[in-house]
Image (cartoon, rainbow, N blue to C red; front, side):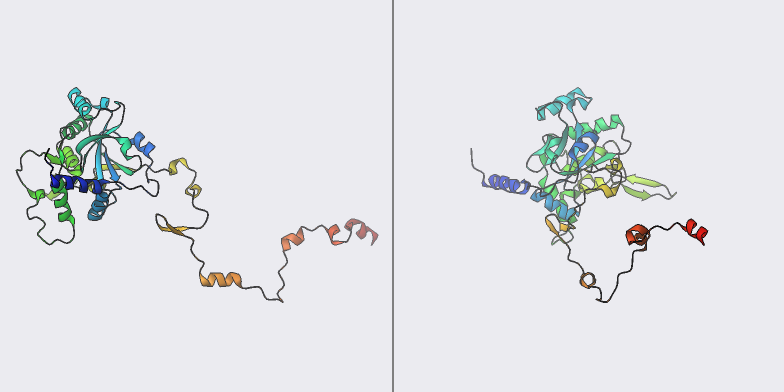
Length: 322
């Protein structure tokens, strides 16, 4: 086998970009709730923990760096041929919850949902999508299994979205190629957006007003989509799965707030605020030496006359004696 230094270097770079770091704090979403809530054809947004995820978040100005399409368990797929196709790319437990995704260094693959149990997730559910159309969306994405990851498209998208560019953003860009033939590569959000477009389901269409005042919807170029677009789309319901559910708690005041008075700028950067000087000065001022505390009238009213050293007087007998 001939050694290819370019391929060797490329693999090293991909491993460096996709290596995930440990998360300092727990994810914002409850993974068990995500597993319960998610439905086939839901789009899962992921707040990744790798270097390439940080790059995507910076470019797109969004916390979401990756998107995957939930396909359910193998038996959730109606078409027997598609079920066999999934099994040919995934030989794990048939009852495992699965997602299909395009991943740098792996291409378009099927992975268990549990892969993201340590990540912050958000569910984007296509509003009103019929079961028949949802199966067609799944079929579209499953036909992309085995495709390579389109790194050039990712770089061109980064160049297009970045606020400053040395060369024209459209120059030799794969984003604006027409009649490019049958695609053999894909990117996560582009593949999912194209799948929904195949059943005429809108994600972020271009709206055009006609002369009579009515609107015409024009599909947007699927290569221009990023994970944040599914979160922004008005045609997807957003389902959040926090660890703490207000609906099951008596009040927000019952939340387990820190009792030490700490405030955090960011993860791992917490401190106890110092008291304002004027407030501290007021607390440190002692009362004047000649000041006499006001009596507690309520306390005086409760004192029994016997406790004062006197005796009880029968008023009625005194009046009779007079």
